[in-house]
Amino acid sequence: MNFTRWSARLPGTQRRAAARAEYTVSPDRRGDGSVPAARGEQLTDDMPRVPAVDELPVRDVLDRVPALVALVHGPDHRVAYVNDAYTAAFGVRPVGEPAREALPELDELGLLPLLDQVLRSSKSRTVKSRKTPGGRSYTFTCTPVDASDDKDGGVLVFAVDVTDHAEAAERLRASERGQRETAVTLQRSLLPQELEEPDDLRIAATYQPGGTEAAVGGDWYDVITLGGGRTALVIGDVMGRGVRAAAVMGQLRTAVRAYARLDLPPHEVLQLLDGLAAEIDANQIATCVYAVHDPNEGRLVYASAGHLPILVRDDSGIVLRADEPTGPPLGTGGWMHASGSVPLGPGSTAVLYTDGLVERRDQDLDEGIAALSRALAGATGTPQVVCDRLVRSAGVTADHDDDVAVLVLQHPARTGHDSDLFRNAALELLGGVEAAPRARAFASGVLTSWRFPTELHDLGVLAASELVANSLQHGTPPMRLRLRRTDRRLIVEVTDGDDHLPRRRRAEPADEAGRGIAIVATIASSWGSRRTPGGGKAVWCEFALPRRTA
Image 1: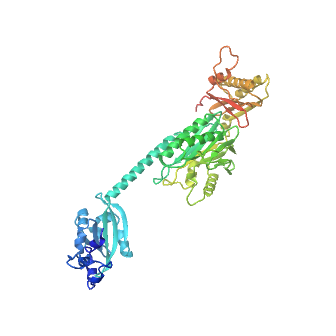
Image 2: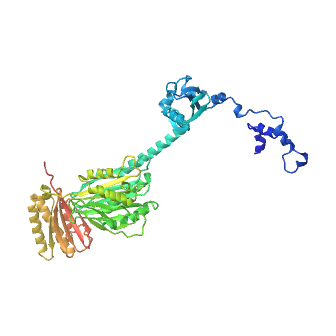
Image 3: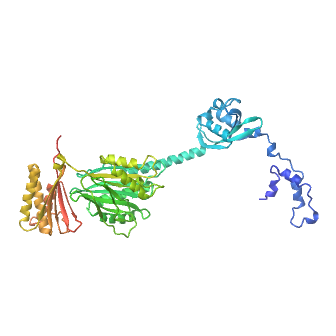
């Protein structure tokens, strides 16, 4: 486009042309790149005069501006002028009246203090997207105006209608809120609705999604009763946000429950999860801690895949930090996980948590864990009370910028009547023909001392006899019979040195063996087997105790 041609029509061009009027284009220079005579004549001769901006009537211009314009003067902001667009939007406004009475819409929008501020500071101020009572949205700019006849000066109010932009932004926010609500609903539905209640542990958990400005993450926790008095505890965090992270979390949690039923050591469970996480989504990784509590051992055996350390407070108030071993997150592959252990005796409290509880942008992660350790050292009461105190001490609020999941478990120290409801008895078996009768006599004596009903006594003795006989026939020393009672069940367990796990099978009429496990499975509430860490196996069964009446 030839801007030279059009520039002659712009305001002010005539003044510049007049300044060049005395300059004459010499005929002998027309061929040396100078402007031709015809073009020079176009710039200076016979052009209609266009009025300059400073010659235009200001009121006529403001009356035709589609934006809202109002001019106020003095400390009480008396109305000096409103344009047609302002009148069309809010009605006729009396001139000379204070803004508080004459311009109530500005008062309702909270702009009168802004007028005072602009008048005092002589600096412009802007407020974005204020919604008026009529439903329209405006962006207001207040600019100081100096007048020679008004020592107090004034303020020019300029408002642009941004209703379409505001509505579009609100639709976008509503869509984001809908997506977040969907993710939160999915997240909560995938978490356990009710925690399983082990006999030997008291457990509480909490999950709090991030604030409205933060997308929901993939934090999760779970409690799984393994049988034989053992309990698995899980907490994890899928890296990422939104529905996708929540969906991956749900798949991993389901897989953990399935692998837990195999009663594998913690590091083997993580090994299986590692491969599954890579198959679910190779671009997403997750951290996880899988721990198993055995009341007979008084320890928490765990494996960690890049997760934060478990904290344990013993009965004396000292907090231990289970740092090692820790492998890489799930989904990275190529790593052999290992199991570790930390004491969890009677009177101890353990905390499993995600990074939202301790990680802050302005604080080192170790400082956050140290602060949590100090809070745990002073937190007493039920697991739910401890859980709430830890969340409060970490400063987690409704507008927190990350998801938070916390799992608190206590191994209570039982005294008085409770101690009579939780008892253990064990017998070392050396093998030989006298082992089975000795085991039956031991079981009968123990169950009698525990004052079990006759029917439950006989079933317990039969189960002990069958499990010992199976171990004598198919296992190897060392062998042990262990009886354990809780307030809800009787547990019979036999361990030996052979790692071949028994299975229930149908014995043919002519078979002389193969009925022991079938008998146990028939008379007991549940049964199972697992490999023990030092080699060998444990086979157990449980009987539900009659409910106590108040």
